[in-house]
Image (cartoon, rainbow, N blue to C red; front, side):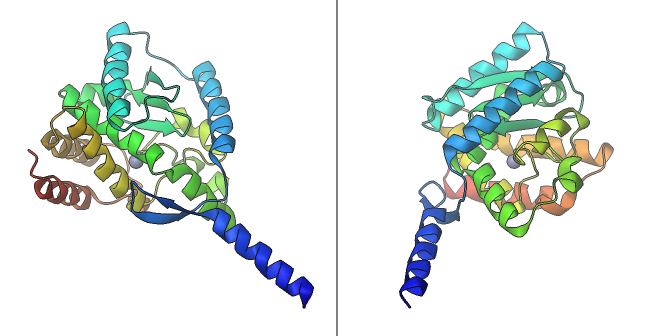
Length: 247
Ligand SMILES: [Zn+2]
């Protein structure tokens, strides 16, 4: 009896430790990894990526991402983290974020965006994933469910149609596995908050996702199963922007 009680109490303790309230999201999260473990893993993954992938040496491109990114992380209240922004040479529009504050965008994404407001949308979305602790949450739920990394590795990258380029990274703690639909929509909403707070135009978020939708129609295969449809995400954003009285 005593043992059963001890077991019950420690199980409860574990569950409490695993469940955290995230104020930005207004919901509880089940987390079995702490930030320090994830940050260590993502720093290693980042170093590996910088060593193995093709980086853009275009100073203007890199400076643009750093400048817009700096305003976004400031708006998100995360300016105290060691952020790094890099442009990768890859024609498919994609971006990713690591929990330690490393952001990669492709040259294809920069080519797609028509202005800094649209780039801010992408970076806001990525920073939204960090604030929302989505990587830790995804890792926590997938580890408990039994994760088969190999099967999903080829779908690595935030915008899902990616990209051999980041495939190797996916193996490390599942840092770059596709986010779920609800995570994507949460990141969109947080992202547009930062876009507005940083002084960029929230309506350009809608324009950006329309461009992404067009690009998808004309191009690469889509792994739509884990992603909200373009219409769903655009409608959700429009509704949210209208509810805040932004334009
Ligand atoms: Zn995302």
